[in-house]
Image (tube, rainbow, N blue to C red; front, side, top):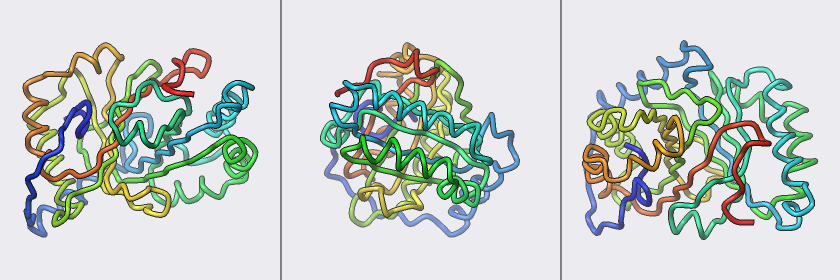
Length: 267
């Protein structure tokens, strides 16, 4: 399972599902998510934090956007409890919703616990980076957080290509249904082209613009990410999840040193 509509890609569907997973199956998902908290932070962390940033064109031209990225990346050594952090430009916008929102940069970070994420949010170094670099240079921001419900770790290394998917569910379908369906679909698809996934229900709705579900699929390279298109197992996973989806945002980015990152998708 690589993304949810536009490069997984999943087209719109008129179907609506009214699946009602059992309480035991929902509990199993919660146990799977929480059990990963003992894993090495470099391999997998149960808390994912994503911030999409649309920078002002003048910020890109002046170098202020690059300074913003550097200030965010520096938080990896300044804020305790950060298991992993990447800040950089978006590589490609892969869905109409992504193009409409128009993010040019993003931050992706991981934490062992929700308290670690909460401590990061109020840490003076983070507050200074946001107030000094993000807010003055951003036209818009979108943020989403989730507890990883995938049982297989999704390590991220320099050079990795990552596909981010944010989704809203259709009327009559709640998010735990989607999480359960994605868990089954990703298990059936296996590690297509070496992809490792993390997904879960958003628990921070205030800045999420209505997106209720998030997923990242991590590949070793952009070539591996591109090669997954048309994979039979992935196509089967799409078919399982498609009926649950409403609006879906999909984009790609590459992890690496800021100086080596590809140019943003649109500035």
